[in-house]
Every structure is written in structure tokens, then in C-alpha cells.
Length: 295
Figure 1 (cartoon, helix red, strand yellow):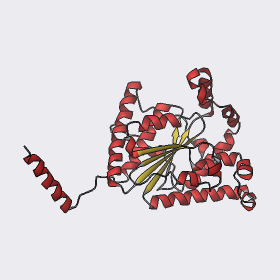
Figure 2 (cartoon, rainbow, N blue to C red):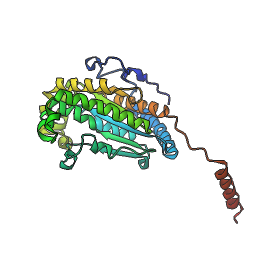
Figure 3 (cartoon, rainbow, N blue to C red):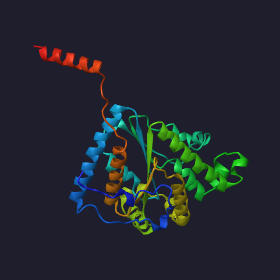
Figure 4 (spheres, helix red, strand yellow):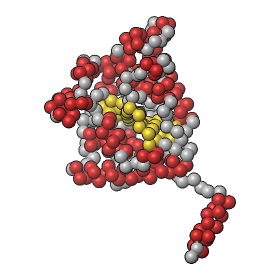
């Protein structure tokens, strides 16, 4: 890959203060024009796919990619454009909406835990268990009135969310110890850019279906969401399960940064095709001689 992106500019430093207000929503462009962008994103796809095939063959490690963002930041399109070149046999993608009645009868990690990627696969979560410390924190009535939790648990909602963040951090550490690396992306869009994209959805018939009445209402809680994201990122960012805060006002630039981060994280996993034992190699040689001897 010819393009080099300094990922330290986007990776949240483990153990150091992070302030979302200082995080950029725009940055220097890594592509010259649309053709150059397509060339770069295509190169990333090839390299990510090559490493995914090694991951699948090795079958010792897995990767979970989590995408979180405010509405209209571009989660869907980023997943589509970045991962479209990867063999679908090795990728599983899940989008999490409002919990069902069945999901509400379980703990808050249950619905995501049951679809964690197995070793050898890449899992993608479009939203995730982080919604439980983001949307629920901005609207605490969800946990006090809807989630059917014991009264003693909801008595102190601040403690409830602090405990959930601890649970998430512990869950991610547990997953990493068992071979599943978790990499998290916050696609950081500005409020001004979100407004432009909402208007585009309203004015473009083919995009009307993406717009919901509640989208505008949630803009009124922008500061609350920013605070919730900042706390979640600060509390759960670790060396093993990092957060990347990616400027999202330029979608193409955002996809290149995400691609570079995924490639970097996969390279750090030291993926390679398994080395066959001597006995199995001998069988291969015997099979080769047999096939070449056929008339």
C-alpha cells in the first residue's frame, strides 16, 4: 500500500485524557480526486482480503469491528465501501436496532454476545452494546421504565452506567484473551454536516426512507450525546481494544482512514497460513506424484 496514514492522529491514546471537543470532524485529504480515491480504496480491499484469508485458514484469531456514530455520519456506506472486496465467507455483519421483547428479557450484552465472530472470521457491528451507554444514558427512562431491571439497579442511574462501562471493558478484555480482537470506530461528524445530510435525505426521494422523525429530535440532545461518547471512549479504550475517532465530514477520507486502521490492526495480529506438519506434507507430495503420473 503506497498511501501512508498516520493513525496516531486518530487512535485514542490508551490511558490519556481524551476530549471529544478537540477531535476534528475534518482533516487533510488523502486523495487527489475520485479516481485516485477508488484506486486507494481498492488497494486497501485487496490487502484486507488477503489477511482475512490468512485469518480464516489460521483459525486462531477473530476480529470484531464496531461502528458507532451520530445519525448520518456514514456508518452504512463505510462498511459497504471498505469491506465490499472481502470474501463474504469470512465476514458477518449485524445492524442493531431497538431491542426486541426477547432481547429485553436478557442482560444488555446478550444480543451482541450471541453473534460475536468466531475465530477465523471478521464480525462487523453497525451500532452495538455501546448503545446501552449512549442512547440509554441520554434517555435514562429507557432503563428505568422499559428494560425491566430490578428496582435496586435503577435506583442510581449514574452508578448503573458506570457499571455498564466496566462490564464492557471487562467483556472486551475477555474476548481478546480468547482470540477475538475488538477495534472500535467513532465516526465523528459535525452538527453542521449532519444537518446538510438530513436535508439531502428529505430532498432526495430515493433517500427519504433513511429519514425518521426522531432524527431531528435527537439533534436536540447533541451535547448530551457528545458527553456520553466521550465518557464511553475514555473508559473503554485500551491497547488491546482501541478506539479510533475518525473525522466524518468527508466520507471518502473517512473510508480511507478506516481502511488504513483495519489493515494496521490485522497486520498486528501476525496472521499467516498454517504450517503443515511433515507427515501431511509427505501426503501432499504423494498426491502430486499420483496426479502427475495420470495419463
